[in-house]
Amino acid sequence: MSEAAPAILRADHVGFAVASLDAALRFWIDGLGATLEREGEMAGAFLQEVTGAPDATVRMAVVSFAGLEIELLDYAGPDRPASPQKPFHPGFAHLALMVADLPAVLARIAPHGWRPAGTPQRIPVGARAGTLVVYVTGPDGATIELMQPADTAG
Image 1: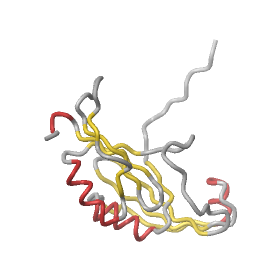
Image 2: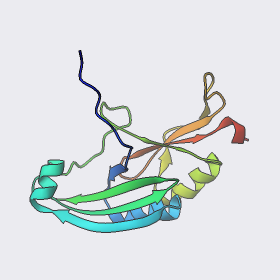
Image 3: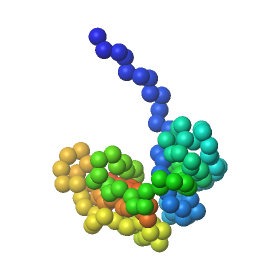
Image 4: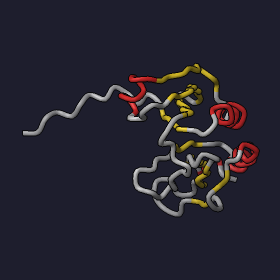
């Protein structure tokens, strides 16, 4: 007999490591309309034990919208990679957002350095047939999937 699955209470937040907390805040607040919830700094043994980042410091902020909290982490210290992974690399994650007007969102986020990976496409079959979808990648390499439901697609 297998053990019972752990009791997951709820999803809490999504986190993104960023190259510049200030630039990231401009994108999330000005570009997507999020609300700044809190800011802070962490360092020392606590940070190393939680994240595995030796001798690092981190400036952090939490923003929220649509009932979701996004944690932005600006790490400083050794072992910081120079280039981000690609969305198709194993272990890479993305956040998916439903939007009412995909072209309007693309226009609003472009000044913040976020670019589509390709041309928005309609899902051809299945439960989400007709949904307009595209990945956008930010200056730090983070990826957001933008989805416009078929019933709002023009």
